[in-house]
Amino acid sequence: MERIPIQLVVCDIDDTLIHKDDHLKEETIQVIQELKMRGIQFTLATGRMPYRAESYARDAELTIPYVANNGSILYDRGRMIWCRMLYAKIIQEITQRYMEMYPLFTVIFSFTDRECPLVRTEWIRKRLGKYKGYDQTLGNTPEVWNQAVHKIYVLDDARSGMIGAFARELKRFANEISFFQYGEFSIEIVAGGCSKASGLTRLLEYLSLPSDCVMAVGDHTNDIEVIKKAGIGVAVANADPQLKAVADYITKGERDQGVKEAVEKFVFGERREK
Image (cartoon, rainbow, N blue to C red; front, side):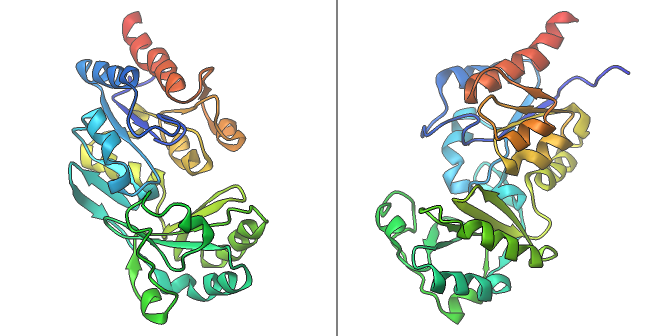
């Protein structure tokens, strides 16, 4: 059976489109512009909150919503068109226990326009002024925990193994939260049922498109579900082995060069052949 032509390209940001850059490279912007000239839509699927993804959305001149905060937000040119928030109190007891056992355990709450730590750890001190909200310590109080947030981000800069232990305990709350672990460094926790794949499902409903016409590109384990859902799932060369294991194609190039390679192979190439 002939494959449906790609009508939408969805890309992760960090270590897929960029490394540590504040903006997309000009070469990447040119690829996105050529996609649009050919009538193919382009958007992002990121774990970032919108305020930390907007510079890339502007560089790409997005005209459709993008998936943010690991699928719990759909954002479109300055407005949140859909979101699902997390009730922090669900994981209060377990998180406070780890904060007490490990003073270096950093906990951050994400809001619409800022990300605030509960306690100012050494990791936070080194980054004051880098991200909006890092200088606004919330406190580890019942009032702070009794609210809805977009995301709870926990990290262990020492990589002591506590992140793995914390993740195992979080599985008890599988019906109420979704979480994404990044090795022994950190975990992002969002509302239950949310992932980049669920965000893509909502986006496709919004655009009235089938998933078969999507090419998704990523690099980490939080991209696994969206890579599997897309018609073509691509892992860039620097991707996590778990993502490579489920991808339809692994690029030879890393990051933005891999994205360009995939677009040329599966989008531009198939149109040149017709």
